[in-house]
Amino acid sequence: MKKRGVLGQFWDYFWRKDDEETADPNRSIEAAWLPLWQSQMITDELIASGVPAVVTDDFNLNMTMYSREPMARIFVTEDRHAEAAEIIEEILGHPPRHRPL
Image (tube, rainbow, N blue to C red; front, side):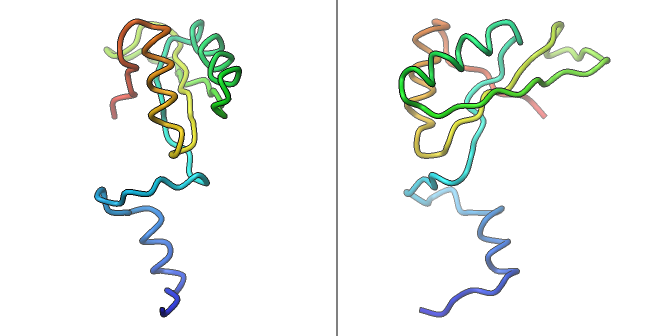
């Protein structure tokens, strides 16, 4: 099999097809967009359950119509996304939201 060049690898990395069945454990994906006060609690629970997760603050001076308080995003690896979404839904009581663009 021929190895792809740098541009081909770049294209494959950023614009992968949605029909790919294998999740890449080296890629991170957003698992939830939560109020900042909930994010650390959820992240600690994910880590305690064995799901590697990180949290990042996501707010600015101009609050939008989507959020009226400081928000945070939780990221997990692609291969553990379904498990993380299930844990988050169990804690919150509803499916996790994602940040609208």
